[in-house]
Image 1 (cartoon, rainbow, N blue to C red):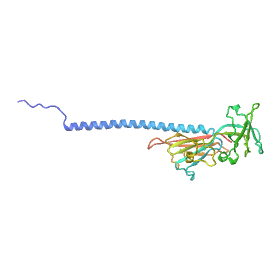
Image 2: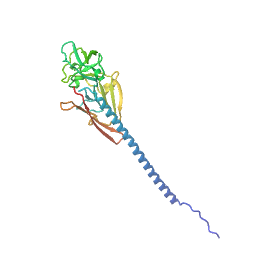
Image 3: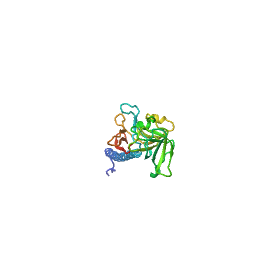
Image 4: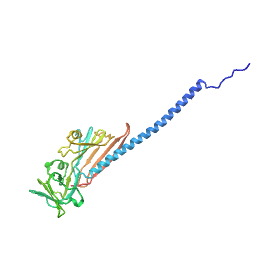
Length: 280
């Protein structure tokens, strides 16, 4: 009588053990791959946040190089003890050109000012209707026309025979500049932090009281450009902008404290000082 032949096969226990081992290996592999993908995506997000911070800080620095002296001012959406809740705005007035005047400022009509020709330095020449300022000592001197530090140009005569031009004004400037500097002004510019975003506002004109972001948004003809995202400043405690005003010992300094959040848990801090090189 022949013995029964048995075929070699897995037992149920062996099959279960193999399945468990394969499952463990699969979970480990997926965890390893997932960790690698997470690290890569965080690196990409971090680089994007750094690029955003670099761009907006560079843009601010370049524009503020042409800020008219003492034209910088800050505002908040609630104006309570310097703290903000969701919005903060920096406003300044760029100058198009600067020159030196050569005469004493007249106190009676005609209110003409003789100044070095802009064409000598390939600078923008003024036109009737442009604004000019002499010796602004505060932001009010720039934005409040009644201070007589910012006057509208009624006429401009460019000399063809000498290096001196004639500027005509309808009234007298309030004060002489010790260095006899004369600035040709552009229109004001505002940078506003609004939640996670930084916007640039232009084309709204001079106002005695600084406009906040909401007022700028509803103003007619205003141009609004997005400059930055991922901003995570808690404006109640960490202002995006702080300003150290001009003094006899140093120029004005704008401090930019940018908190950039690129995921739900990580925030990168960027601190930058922008020195305002111009003096009145």
